[in-house]
Length: 431
Image 1 (tube, one colour):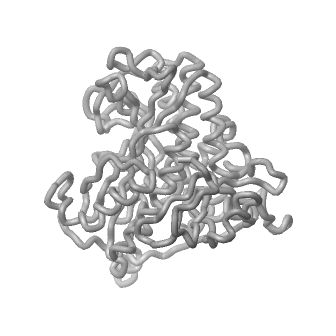
Image 2: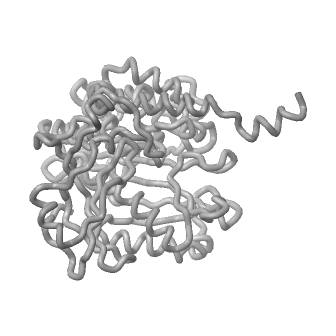
Image 3: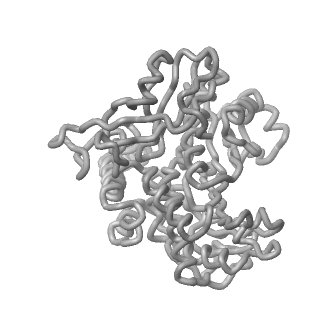
């Protein structure tokens, strides 16, 4: 996807250039095509606060960027060749990269955490490939509710009903260089899933960031609000982010031993299993994300593993040599993909370096196993684990982890200071 970053599609008058913030939300600027050569040479200045603000764009003092140092600038440069936006004539879209005023990487840029683990894997002789599955809701922008009703998972009839918006999402986003493999209705009204083909881990994470941003834009064009919020409706299915991992060496899948999971694959699996509990904050960053961690919802509640088993936290998929992989299933669709994948890959590589072995396989219902470690089901527990985790500090770095924890604590405080409509309805007249 890199290509010639200076080259614009014919007829371009505006370039949308952005990078991912702490929540994986793409933020940036729209730039006139006449100014693009200047941007390519010298970058575009914007505040480092972009990497230290929450999903509502609120800022607070962090160790790296704060009121005392004046929220200084960084520069944003194009990282990919701009591609035409099919639904917006004359506009091109471009993924950016951040650079400090000292021309060095920005230490709190989330992308840097994943870059470090990709480099580590390269030094070990591996290329990390990741495929991603993302679930989201398509809602009425006014009511914030689904327009359809009833659960019709995998229904081709329901898919046809949604084709006027899902068709463009598949086709036009694919045209922009994000290879969409398939889409389908999911386990709730208005909920859908889209699979993005596996590729090198950093590119896979970039594509998640771009995909979520583009889906929101394109959905609005067709009269829908797209949301990747983990659990919009308590009685309905939550939105997950499943990641499919494999390591490749000399053009071969190192996870495959004649279509069965190899010793290397088992060690990678064991590494992810051993760190799955303590790195939960990277997979689920808001109080709402923990509402989807319920038994019998196809969201895992522990770190057990199994073969082609959707009740476990880590699912081994075997078959052809190229398709053999490990799927981790606990991620929320709204988490930061750089942090999420960086922690998963770091844990897996640790497993290889340390020769770890996973626990006994779960053959039946993973929700009923008594031998697995339970995953946190509330944000406060995940924060406490992250604070004590040397692993998280080593993967994300002190400043990144501090900002992530600060945001989580702010969300907990905000939620704790609310009196909800449910409380008022239940208690006001009766107590």
